[in-house]
Length: 98
Image (tube, rainbow, N blue to C red; front, top):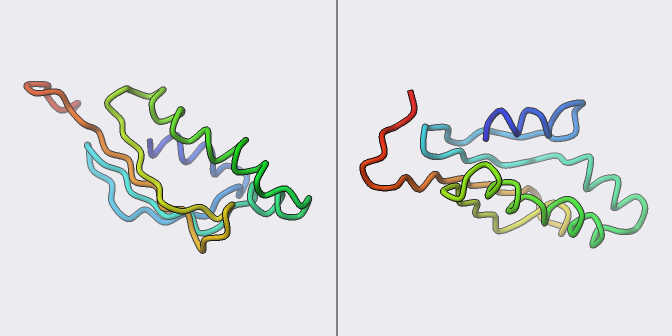
């Protein structure tokens, strides 16, 4: 997930702070979002939420059905930051990746 976020943030698209990074979790706050800025400038933040933010959950699931994303707020919807919390729910007896 950390590598994916680096890709999404490329070209200064996102400013973010990593709060926790372990083999089983990745917690970040996005504090600046050029996507949100763009959609606000064209007067369509709701469209931005549907097209950009709503894809976050499907993207997390695309990495693995065992990846769970929790997000309670977004800049696109007027919050001060987006709170992304990724958790890997390992199956029993599954070893950690090296």
